[in-house]
Amino acid sequence: MQTSSLVTLADIEDARRCLEGVSVQTPLDKSRALSDICGAESFIKCENLQRTGSFKIRGAYNRISRLDADEKAAGVVAASAGNHAQGVALAASLSGTKATVFMPASASLPKVEATQRYGAEVVLEGKDFGVAFEAATRFSEEKGAVFVHPFDHPHIIAGQGTVGLEMHEQLPDIGTVVVPVGGGGLISGVAAALKHLQPDCEIVGVQAKGAAAFPASLEKGSAISLDSVSTIADGIAANTPGDLTLEHVSRLVDRVVTVSDEAIARALVMTAERMKLVVEPSAAAAVAVVMEGLVEVKAPLVVVLSGGNIDPLLLLRVIRFGLGASGRYFAFHSRIGDRPGELYRLLGLIADAGANIVGIEHHREGASVRLGDVDVLLQVETKGAEHIKALTDSLCAEGYVVEPL
Image (cartoon, helix red, strand yellow):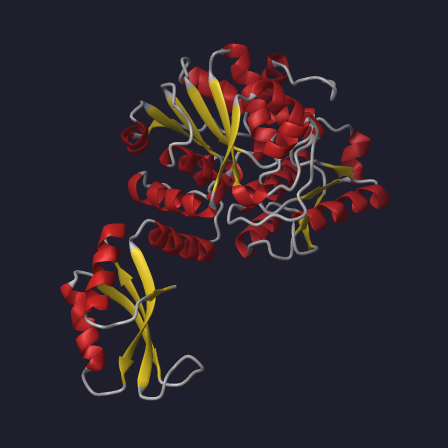
């Protein structure tokens, strides 16, 4: 394969032969939840059930297993916030070579520990992926280890393209595919496969608004780098496309859209509640595209759930955030008089409004608390935006201040 040209179907078929016995064919399941939302027959490609919990093992093994004896003896090095790290660690172990993985200091503990369990040496470096990436490239130059790029290499793209081959075999008449996009390796491979097998298939990429380098890069015609990225979807928090992935996306992908962290959180809650699946925020981004109505769906629709590696602590925070964004959870400040029975009265009004109190704090001291008043922070379960408005209106009518958090 030549890095100056697109990955071909033959490259992807060769990658699938390489991956036999290593990756698993993940399910393509019908989703009534998504079908109800968009009004079109919808399916989910469950790469969250892949080995290492994401699609990354496909590209990593296709790259590392092809190294010659001298390259394997020198070892491999990679940079990752989590999923690529685990894919490289397992692929290196299966290929009989040593892996060193640079991860940001902010990487979640479960992802660090999983990477170590797969046999890699983990080095925590810097505050974000960009710093870890630079450290990994320096290590490659100084130690002679082979740098395994997370997305911008033809073997990586071809490996990820096996997801597209599987989808076509499982559902030959796909109308629309939605794929999460970070650096672009997954969507490049999926598009290379599907645009050859079914040219009329609409391929849509999705990035988090806080890490959306592709739209500007596509408009400019060359890769641009974001100064910083900020999103809960660390799996797609790449600050720049690769030259090769940008070429694939510009030539093969029909559209790249963006979604907010709020939309991702709502999608993660819906995926857990209605689809009964635990996925990471980057996978939920693809679901968010459908929930937000950002694409005109040509049926049947396939949404790629790219991974399921989410830190349980982040899951708790995101679910609470998502519940708040969808009106199912409401946190607010109020004030009551510092007299017996005042808190009881406030809680009674909340109960009368049909809201369930899940947390309460009250403070008599502080810069914002007036003498004779008590500041109260409440968290309540609600039934949606209209219920929150009704609760707020009823409290305000009784003279209470309601300051949403």
